[in-house]
Image (tube, rainbow, N blue to C red; front, side, top):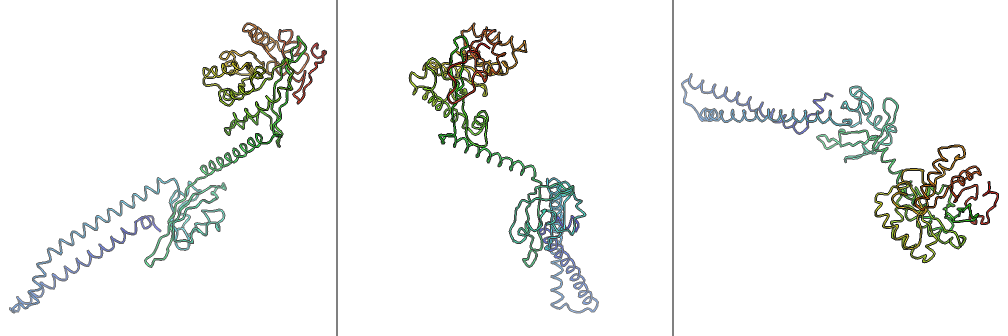
Amino acid sequence: MKENDTDTPAELQRARSVVSSAVTVLAVSMVVALISYAWDWLEVWIKGETPELDEWLGLIGVAWLPLAAATTVRLVRFHRSLAARAEEAVEAFRDTVHTAHGWVWQVDADLRIAYSSDGVGELLGYDAQQLTGRDVRDLLDRDPAASEHVFDTSARQDWISSAVHRDGTTRTLSSSATPMYGAGGCIVGYRGFSADVTVEMAAASAEQQLRQEQDAIRARVEHSMRDPGALQIVLQPIVDVDRNEISGMEALARFAAEPYRTPDVWFAEAWQVGLGIDLEMHAVAAACRRLPSVPAQAYLSVNVSAQTILDQRFHQLLAGLGAQAARLVIEVTEHTAVDDYDTLADSMRLVRATGARLAVDDAGAGYASMQHILRLRPDIVKLDRSIIADSDQDPARRALIGAMCNFGASLGVTVVAEGVETGAELAVLTEEGLHHVQGYYLSRPATDPQVDWPADRLAA
């Protein structure tokens, strides 16, 4: 079927046919009538007869011929107008077909392709001219039977299908089909449009998967806060090597859920789903219940993000501890950036008013921790394991440790080394003037850590 035949709107085509027929009939009738009237009067004139009624009526008919001619002219103009409108409609349809990002198609009652736009080339890799006569279902769905129901109805249908491109790849198509009716009211075919929505569907699928993952994370975190056995607090001693005693205990969270996830992963996922502060508050409350397990001369150190420090619930928790709040050290982690240090500093003044002290965790591991030190003026600075590791073999690390010790001494800040794992590392720390250490070499985190320190470890 030619494109012009397919593109011309049926209503305009029918109107043009009616007008064209009317013009033809009227023009022929005028010519026949004029010849008939002229012949009658010619016969009267030749024979010299007296005109009868039919001749006079014919004369009156001739008088109406100018009106009929004018009507014919108007009909011709109207016909031309319809033709122009039809051509405009055709051009508009062509423009739509050519600019549409998809495939415009038309099928007959047997679902054989009668018209196909060139968009099928980009969509499925086929030449439009080669598709005439093919079953459209073979192209729209890799499983043709899956789209059978679409063409079993008299209403417009929209559906999503999985189609195979000519190059063998799979594409996701969004299609719509509208039935076409013949003179008897029967469906004689369908007009349709199909577009490639592979990217959109992949994005929607990824978004749905992300929502499912987020829901699963939220459920795990919420369960860990409801189940008394899901979260356990272990303690790792912070040792004063000069006095050979525990100066503090760091509270660390351990989660019992399977599959196993490190605490960092648990808290990171909680932040992803908006439960970061809630989980931190849950862990801090559990840690505070361990205060009776901490030696009388020692403090309890808890890890808290800047966002949690700003939360009113955190201040209510400290206020509820009463005098015991003075035994707490609040370690500000560097895992989240601080947007407003002035507001955080104001909140820290309220924390210090309870007697609690401030520590900056992971110092030296990144820019954020140094900003915390400079802007918050902590009581304790904890050097990150990345600085301590192999400091007995790396002069640069050793020099940085010495510089941090001098920096702390100049500000009256206690410096603690985290992650001490060998006697050689401990020796470097003490030689550089650092006397508060924490790490596996001295004690691993435990529910009830060793309190009496082996002297040989500290003398190593």
